Image: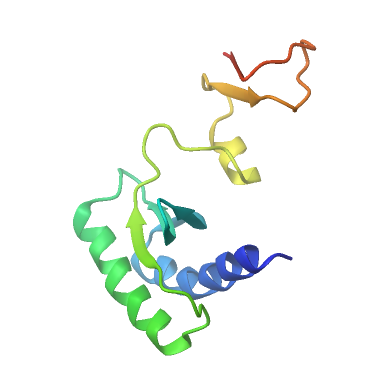
Length: 125
């Protein structure tokens, strides 16, 4: 397991009780470097959609736990967000939720696709 995956896993473990307490769903956690800054992001949702106030509740609680745990030595920006309409399908539950729905699948160069085509980006609907 990479350091990035370890940070994401530990963050998920911290977030799960927060999600249960408020009736939210943890969609994904990512630790990524963008424009020279590290970001630790949680994507959360709930029935009927997540609000800005919901994100603030999660952010404040999660931030307090992260300050106590302090397992990431690098500086990072903590973000809580809705997964949005273009949410990625990463986990089994995401695929199950999308059964019967129209999805946009993108394959990138170097990955084999059923049609045998290669290219920078190919969309399949």
